[in-house]
Image (cartoon, rainbow, N blue to C red; front, side, top):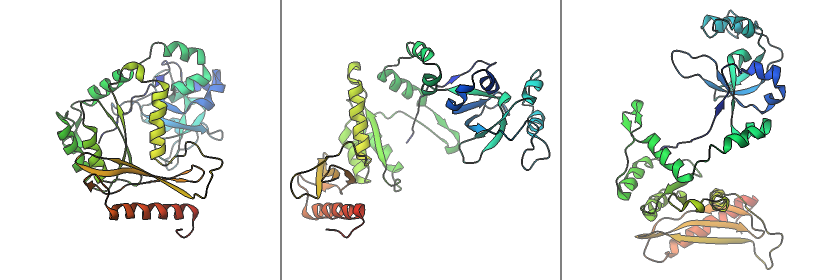
Length: 323
């Protein structure tokens, strides 16, 4: 399975370094989360890092741990400092950065440039965001089509494999099965975008077989369908199926401790897709999945197993023996 994330990242002009931000827009610094190297190594794209904060006790001449020279000397020896940058980089302040791990490293602000996303820009320059946003509106269908084009025939040299388009629902379903040959991580939830030509139930049946909850969305609705309410409902489905609490009841009449809701689905075989568990105040305890069932009815053993799992989940939530 391949996940693709398309995000807008806005980089500063060449002369706008993190050093410039500190000297000219110091209030921005606390909002900037990502930075990019102003140099490249071995022809690779400039590395990006998470900005962790200012190292007020360090200077450009501070030693690099485990090395015989200081921070400036290290970068100079690696060819990271271009002609004309020596003075400004040598006077740079030092910040701490990380590269996807917990380890933090000292770096010179003269060799880093800030990266902005819309959330950051909204905080530091909302008028600019409003001007940019007018030209960046991208309908959902266009986003999905562009995603498909980006991954089409994508080669994975390390695995001697590439992505190919599935010509039918049956082929797509068969492609899913081997990737689920090993048990998926606990609490896995699949969010799947399909169009009206796809048989959702066939894909869902495969997911059921591996004990996976699914949230589907259609990618070929009329454009006006993709409103705030549509995405709100989609988010509510994902949130609930992942065990989240959307709302709670202040008081429930009657002597009730646990509500169990069954959602039955499937085509050639029937299965409760989800069994939701709620306390008397509406708090969701989680969900259970059943084995696939033949026929139109749930057999007694399957129903008994689901009820037993539900009661055990209730007991674990309250750290008490099952009722």
